[in-house]
Amino acid sequence: MSIHPDPERLAALVTGGAPDQGLAAHLASCAECTAELDGLRELSGRLAGLEPVDWLEPPATVRAAVLAAAHGETVRPRPRRWLLVAAAAAVGVVVGVLGGRVLWPAAVQPAPEVVLATTRLDTLDTGVQEGTATLVQTAGGVELRVVTSPFSAGSGYLEVWLINTDGKRMVSVGVLSNGTSGTFPVARGLIDAGYLIVDISREGLDDKPQHSGDSVVRGKLSL
Amino acid sequence: MEPDEEAEARRVIAESLHSGSQEALAEAYRRWSRLIYTIAVRALESAADAEDVTQQVFLAAWTGRHTLRPSADALPGWLVGIARHRIADAIAQRYRGRRTLAAVADQPDPAVAEAADRLMLAHEVAALPEPRRTVLTLAYLHDCTHDEIARRLDMPVGTVKSHLARGLLQLRRRLEGGE
Image (tube, rainbow over all chains, first blue to last red; front, side, top):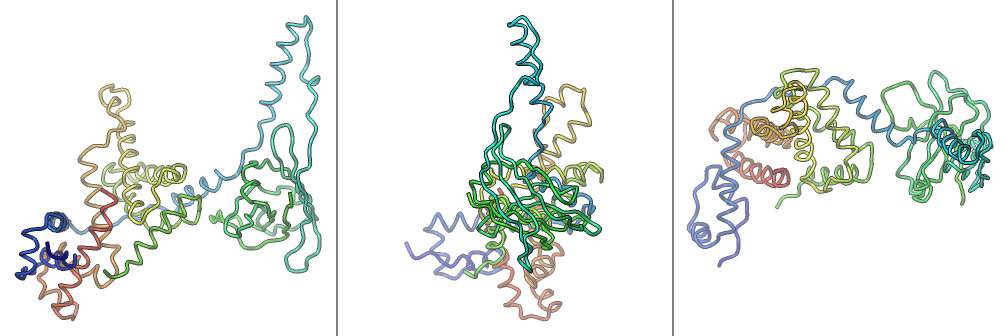
């Protein structure tokens, strides 16, 4: 069998060329090229059946909703404390019934907390410490606690991020709603995956869920 | 074969989306939201329902990104596949209560599938680089002869033929993963 011809020569046959002797001879003996030619013919037939299309643009609200929801998925929901209380209460009631007296949830002792890491939060331009971030293991999971000097968010809000040490990936962990302190549950897996740089940014009330680029303070947790 | 920058760009978008990049989701939306929305509007004949479907498709693409095979030709076919199922769901919703139709929910209608395939192909033609896009559009959608195209675009007939052959090959490569 001869060497396969350039696929462009096969395509040219379909779009209006005539085969030269060499190509015709090759096709007569090569099932692979014949199949490719058939595929191109079939595609050309489908193209010939097309009609011009007026493409419709979905409203901008659809894009905003998609990106906001995708962004929200990376924000860990706050722990449902009432569920923990309810679970503790249920245990208490069972124990209480078995023990012959009622135990209230308040009798459940909280597990001790362990500080996993802490960092100064410094301004990016002047390197002045303006806050602290602490990563704490609690009974309910890992929490990031942030305390800062009171920053102005301008007309927007302050958002807390964890940036990966690879410098390429980041996730939002929540909004610093009172402007000076907040506690944010974070997945342990994020920490293990290298999301160790705590960053607080000013964000506008706009349709751009990604980081504004306007960082106020930053610091790296060392485990 | 000539290098295909578009294929490379699509591979990067697919890989980034697969590994959780929101920017990749935004880029996929920029490139294919009109395709998905147009398919949905035609199938559902309702802008509001088509908006819902479009939103669902890209959100499903985000939440299901781990199931995307990150290759150069995977994304549009994958998105259109999700859209066909969502459209089937939306149609089934309209007939909720009729058991027979509810039973076939999530089974894409072959007519919807065929229309979606045609739109996907037309969308790929529209995504070709110029002047190839215009050459193929004139030849296939407006039935112009090679000589007519050469005159209108002020290019040699040989160049027209070359664009047609290369464009056809490009489309075949692009659609192989979407079938």
